[in-house]
Every structure is written in C-alpha cells, then in structure tokens.
Amino acid sequence: MKHIFNKQTFAWALYDWANSAFITSVVVVFYPMLLQEYWNHDVSSGTRTFQLGIANAIASITVLVISPVLGSISDTSSAKKKFLMFFMLVGALATVGLYFVEQGNWFMALFIFVLGNIGFAGGNTFYDSLLVAVGKKADYDSISAFGFAVGYLGGGLLLVVNFAMATWPAYFGFDSSLHAARFAFITVAVWWVLFSIPLFIYVKEPTKVAKGGIISNIGPGLRQLKNTFREIRNLKVVGTFLLAYFLYIDGVDTIIKMANDFAIAMKLDPVKLIGAFLVTQFIGFPAAIIYGMIGRRVGIKQAIMFGVFAYGGVTIYATQMDSVAEFYALAIVIGLIQGGVQSLSRSLYARIIPGNKAGEFFGFYNMLGKFAAILGPLLVGMMAKLTENPQLSILSLILLFIGGGVLLARVDLQEGERMAHELEKRH
Image (cartoon, rainbow, N blue to C red; front, side, top):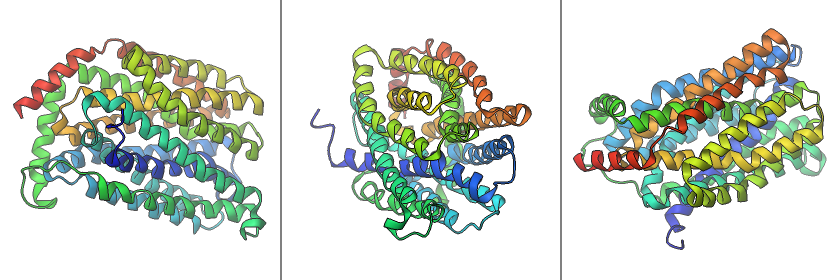
C-alpha cells in the first residue's frame, strides 16, 4: 500500500480537501441559511426551496452542456489541469462575491450561487479524470476513497472554524453572527485556492501527441467527442453503469444540496444543524476509507449497491423525522455511506473506460451526474411548491435509488474491464 500514497496521490487528494469546503460551508450550511435570513426572508419555505432547486438546476444544465466537450478537448490538448484551474477560479471568485451581495437581493445571490456551482462541478470533471494519472487501475478504489475521505476532513475542519465564527462572532472581531456567516464565504474561497496549488505543481498529466494550444485543438476535440458517443453506444457495460449512476446519484446529490433547506423548513435549531453536518463530515472521513476497503473485499459493485439501497431507507426515514436527535441519526447514517457510494462509483467507472480517453469519458460521467442534479432538485422543488411541505417532497427520490440499484446489478465489471482494455489498445 505504501506505493499508492505518494506525492502525486496526496497532491491530487488535496483538491478534494480544498473544494469540499464549498459544499459543506456554502451549499449545505451558510447559503441556505442566509437565503432565508438575509437575502429572501419574506417568502414561504416552499418558494425558497423552489428557488434553490432552480438555481442548482441551472448550474447543472450549464455543466451538462460543456463538460463532455471540454473533457474531449482536454484529452486532445493535454489541458486537464488548465481547465481545472479555470473552473476552480470561477468557483472561488463567485464564492467571494456572495459576501458582497446586499440584503434582500435574492436574485443576485442566486445568480452568483449558480456561478459557484458551475466552478465546482466543472472543475470536478477534470479532477476526476486525473485519477487515471496518479495510480494504477488496481489502486483506483483506494485512491478514490482516500480523496473523498480527505475531502470530508478538509470540508469539516473549515466548517468547524466557520461554525465557531458564527457562534461566537465577537471573539473573531465580527459585530454579529450574520456578518461572520457572510465572511465564511471568503474563508472558503481562500481555502479552495490555497489547497489546490499542490495538484497543479505535483500531479503529472499524461502528454498527448497533439500539437498546438487549446484553441487549435477544439476541432479535433469535437471530432473525438463524436467518436466517443459511438463508442459508448457499443460499450454496453459503460452505458448500463452510466444509466444506473444517472439515477442513484440524482438522489445522493439532491439530499446533499437540499438537506439543510429541509431542516430549516422543519424549524430545527440552526446551530444544532451545523453540529449534525459536522458529524457527517468527520464520520465520513474514516468511513470513506473503510468503505473502500470493504469494496476491495466484497466487490466494488456490491458495496455500491448496499449504499444505494441504504439511501432508499434514509429517504423514507427523512420524511418521518421531527426532532434534532433524529436529524443527527440521519447525519450519522449518511456519513457512513455517502463517501463510499461516491468514491467507489468513480473508481468503478475508471476501471471500465479506456485510460487514454479519461477526460472525455469523465466528461460524460459528470454530465450525467449533473443532468441528474437537474431533475432531483427540480422535482423536489416543484413538489415542495405544490404541497408547501419540503420534508415530504424528498420521498420522490426513492424511485431513483430503486431504479439505480436494479440497473447497477446488471453491470458486468469483468466484461467492462476487458472491453476498455481492447479499446485502449486500438488507440
């Protein structure tokens, strides 16, 4: 195992440490709180849930359109790290921008939030595709799980700091908890940029034969994208897995993005809610690593399936909870399975695609993930608007977990690896 965790591996995983702060401190905790308390406090909870769902959907549509194209171009021009840097800066600058949005300006808050999500999701297309550059296929499970585990720890540590600032603002020089919560956006941006630097220095991107810069490779990249469409149609294992992933990751992402909004609608204590999210983060750190080990022992597909059906149980339980204690119980369960499902899905996919086309294939992977993240928030948001019950609306996600699990059971991992190897040899 020693050879797995080298300088490149740690540098790659640190990007997960860096950008996870955006999810924990911005998407999950402070943005929904400020949307309610500061930017848009005079509307119903159903309307806010609907607005949040629309914002997440717009960001996802944008990434859906550009990810496969940019992934293909990055493969042709060896530009994964350049694209990653661009999207990282978009996300970080947008996060800083949230600090400056004035009270009551909910439209600008939503617009900048969309930009931040585009930066986060767009960057992940190229970050994920670099997995094949930092390890051997046999090590993908461990490396991917390590990245998610480090992400849980990094996002959790900064959330602790931001939680302390919002709870005891005077000790940090702020005049109110509201001011401290807004300043949390600046800390996330700095954290994101700072801990991304090792990846750009130490991770070595495979060099392609293609000459010229990014612009000159747009044409070849688009032609390669067209070829990839045809290849995915022929790679039945890849197609089946992508459809399964499309369904179950929809539910996972929607729960992550909307959990705090559900809890706020239930009128639970915001301070105690942050504690619950911290529980998820710090349980998620060892759980993701352990889940990766379990995947190596019982089979990666079986481990993912267990997590997917566990999420179905979480969905049913979430509609019944009405106390902080139950919300903490939910946070513990999610912490145990969330990172495992995400990390093993990424490593399973890396096993069944040709390594020399990782950028474009991961472009499709993230495209489907983001397309799913359109349907989930929209579905939950519209149901919340119609019923004025954001908590009950989450029940619709159980169909996605069932459908995803059934399709995942049909994925033949050995056949997928064989076909990927043959395709890589032909190119």
